[in-house]
Every structure is written in C-alpha cells, then in structure tokens.
Image (cartoon, rainbow over all chains, first blue to last red; front, side, top):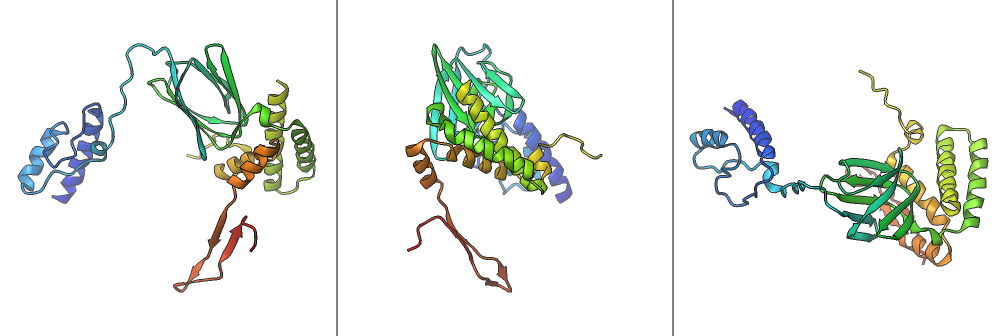
Length: 203
Length: 70
C-alpha cells in the first residue's frame, strides 16, 4: 500500500503543477483542483485523513504571461544592502552578461544571465542611468519583469580613475609573476575587473 | 558521460562562484572615490567566531573581526 502511495503522490504533483494558474486553498477541504482520481483513491484507503498537500499547493500561482507584449519592462535591481530600483517601469536595460552586452526589451525571451564586471544601463525615455556592476545575475521573466541582482553596483562618477590604473598595473604585474593556479586566477580576476572599470570610465 | 562544458578559469583553478564574486566586489570597492569608499568598507565589516567541534566539545575558536580592538 505504501509503495502505491509514492507513485500516486508523484502523479498528483505533476497534475498539480500543470494546473498552477488556479488559486490554492490552504484549508483542509478537498483540493479538488488537484488530481481527483488520487483524492478518490485516498479517501477509500484513509477516509479519516486529509489528502496530503503537495508543494505546488503552497506556492503562489506563476504570474500569467500577457497575450500581447507589454510596452514597458519592469526592473527590480537589488544589491545585498539596498534595493536600487524596485518595480521601475523602463523602456530598455542593457546588462553586461558573460556572453556580451545584452539589450533587454519588454517581451524578451525568459533568460537567466550571469553578469560579468561591466556597465549596466537603464534607459527610460531619453534618460540613461549607468552603473558599474561587479558581478551578479539577471533573471528575465516571461511577463517582462527583469530581476537583476548584483553584489556591488556603483554610478560611474564614484569610481576613482587613478586607483583603477594603479590596480590594473599591480594585477598585470601579479599575473606575470603568479605561480600557483589560484594566484593566477586571482590576478586574472584583478586584471579583468580593472580593465572593465577602465573601459567603463573611458568609454 | 564526462561533461566537457567549458568552465570559467576561476572554477578550473578551484575557486567557487561566491569567492569570485566577493573578490570582484572588493576590487570595485577599493577603487571608489573617498566618501563612498569609507562607507562601503564600513558596511562590509564582519565579525565572527568559528570553532570546530571534537568529542562533543568546541575547540579553540577562530575569531575574525574587523571591529577595532578594545
């Protein structure tokens, strides 16, 4: 009987997730939107126990994708210590993905992009706001919401060009003299980050 | 079924993504102009004590602190 239960339970999870757009009831009433044949069999076997809840019954329904492409992109840009942009509606965002500068417009295909050190620009009408991002991720959802998370993001004016040059020289020298793999990797990271900052300041 | 996906150079050298990300963030913080640099450094101060356990007892703790010594 217990062997059957795991098969029946796993069947109900897949059935539940396909009906994820319906609202979830938290009460102990029969979740009739989930697999009814499972619930029937359950009631026959254990009439005094409520059918088990599946993880999808506790989750909020996935937001439905609009049938027509929205005109604006909603951006949530967060840092560990602050929420830089929260639900801001913009026209376009250009993010420094590891695969290159990626322009995100409303209706972008859902993507998860890892970010490399580089400039992120937020375009709203004629305003462009640029940030230098140290690294992070961008989650682009089907409903034209972009969640961008970064560890450090600073406006370009806050970067000190002379420090960047010094750092670049220092790490280039470290890269040449590095011996272990780890030292080489650290020096390489230093060179990449400082070159990116240099390019950001001069570009 | 060996996976031959290209790994980033830091992963090949044995570094995890978190270490890489923290190193990048520290490098950017060090290149900030003055009031921002001091703010960001004070924001990132940590203070923790770590002790390994053996035989049900904590061994000597390792203390990592950026707080000024009193």
